[in-house]
Length: 236
Image (cartoon, rainbow, N blue to C red; front, top):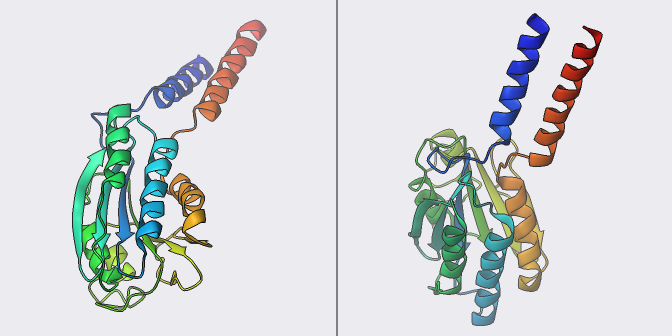
């Protein structure tokens, strides 16, 4: 009897996990995309960067409500250009992808710490994971050194140790990009050789950052539990 009850409980848990994520629940991952809009990026490179974000959003981000995304644009300063919003359906994802295509470049210096501070303000505190994702083609020349200590406001360590972020990840573009400020357990950095390669590298990065249930794995678990139950029944 206890075996049957245990199998039933496991199967129920599997089916619950396998069910579509409820859009009304808090997202599993909140992802703050911090975009470099400084003057070292040419107009054509900016367009490649924005097209890369748009295509990556459309092809990688799920529409089941498990991910919420905000957008921060930085140069000499930083601003939240799109607040944290849950991607709960295809329309929401398309709107976000199209938003990048219409985003303008500001120009100016590079204040990565400004972008990190602005990103921190977009987290709700209710998600299971909060990720800051910084893209840059250079290095910080205004504001705090993002690789500095947690005691300095605007560093990656500050965002993780004193703020809501669990990790700060970095995607560098070109050989001049600084990626040494990734911070937090499981944090990482990737380097795109050029803006032409940015889209593919970004897709890989977002795939690693978002947490999405694996339907195939959960389905196999359910079938396995049903098989065990069948064997037990035959033996009985």
